[in-house]
Image 1 (tube, rainbow, N blue to C red):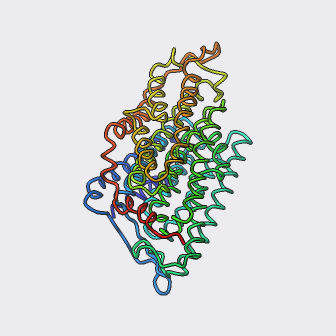
Image 2: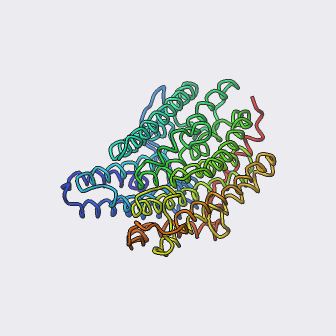
Image 3: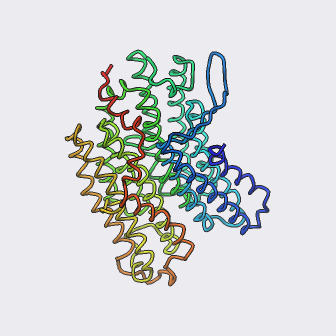
Length: 486
């Protein structure tokens, strides 16, 4: 029952908001933040159980010829994504207090909390039907947040880009799920291990899964929805999308793709490795030329998540295990960066790096927090970004030295674009028309501080996460490597 409490606490909080008058903004904010905090605290209770096994609940849903169940699970893989979701959600819901007027605040908080529930449902689903339901459901609150709270025509176009691309990915995934279940007659495919499929059947089913995952992450060349969405979405929304939702495709590859399709993953690895390297290099090069700070971080995310694709299809235990650390680290860093950039945009009224600067002179606390997040993205030793990248490169080098060497170029490029971001915001000459009050408010410091503390924690103690990586997932890569392509 505790798993269900974690999943549905945000949704129940959202429903409770509907009984609060729209004008009672203080009550709406207090209830929403309390619900998010309770969900985070509940998720922490699984830290002990995940070391001793998995928390598991399964109730028969469909019986007969087609077997399906309401099967939710929190093990040492899923726990990290649950914790990431609940922590980032607290920060984003708290930040949302400044991004909606009183008349629309209730709907804004309702949709953010509903989005959190769909993410938690996705990361805990152990039944393929349940997983697909949450995969598609998450589109609804995000689209409504994007289109309903858009402030420009470009923002509304970005909402439709998001819906069309991710909706198409969902349809492709549905085809794969139907084809797989038509063969196995069960949505509980994880319980019985890799299904016995013919070579062509496994190849085509995995291709549909992989395409959906590539769109959701996203990866090159399926990333066209990402730059406009990340650029024009409201700050709390983009922080949740970039910090948490972008991990859904790679999580699904770890939880479903590698275990279910070992032969097909081996056969398609050369193609996916090329796409991974293209994502890494293209994302880094595109980030170099950006003047919009949100677009810069969007392309930086494309590059960093491409590194995780490389890690998974290098089929090395070290790189596969490190991919989980990298995903959690990127989620924390991306959420922190987008929230801090939202605070900057609120103060100076623009995202153009060439137009404003000088915040370091008037906002030393903002400078300090931005420096931590930027150095985390750069991969500075002692921060979580370094630990994840270093272990991925070490592991990937063992089996894919050429692709790893090419990926190293992105590390050099990251130094340039991250310092470009940091210098542009903080150290260019101060604008004469800049607001006098540029420093962070106490609430803004407190909502970002837990994310930055987690970045430090994982950077100084990466073994805390790596030691909990399930061996079944670590071995999934080597199983695929040992499998014969067919």
